[in-house]
Image 1 (cartoon, rainbow, N blue to C red):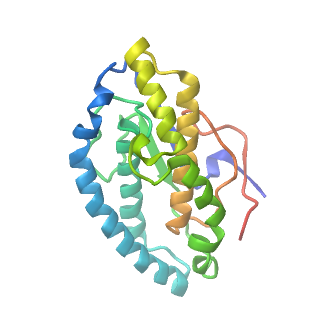
Image 2 (cartoon, rainbow, N blue to C red):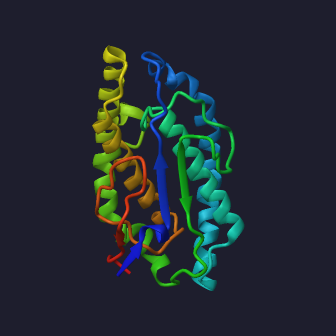
Length: 222
């Protein structure tokens, strides 16, 4: 089955926020520390609430809307910080401390609220069905730590982008498109594993700052 892109459950958009400082990227690991502290606590709450959402879906087939909105907020906040720091280096604008959508920020994430979810899939999609995706994400983000310290492809590409900024003052557009495509893949899998959608993440690298035009092949484990 193919859905129009406008009906994709997970949408990830980003704008390369030029001009970028040649050297600020070297200290963003310090500047982002307050966000990482808050996000550490938020992800603990995220995990606890996701357990509650699991049982709610199992019993009712519905994801409680307040939990969904909170968890979406955590994903949005994480994406903004990652985009600012070593998940992309796509902006020098400091991320806002908010769970809400920030319309004027250059990185956006949205997940369509599902009116109904499969009560059977909830038992297997976050571990069994997502295993192939997890294997790929291990290549993309390594150990999952922020930046190139994780040893993944995203970190390596972002390091190249940082060196290019320092030497030439420019962020290579080819690297930007690839980095955002990989980040988009990671976020699609994160939303699926968090039980926020039954649409299996496509095994396709959609590069660039905007969601692609055309259709999304939703064929996959059900």
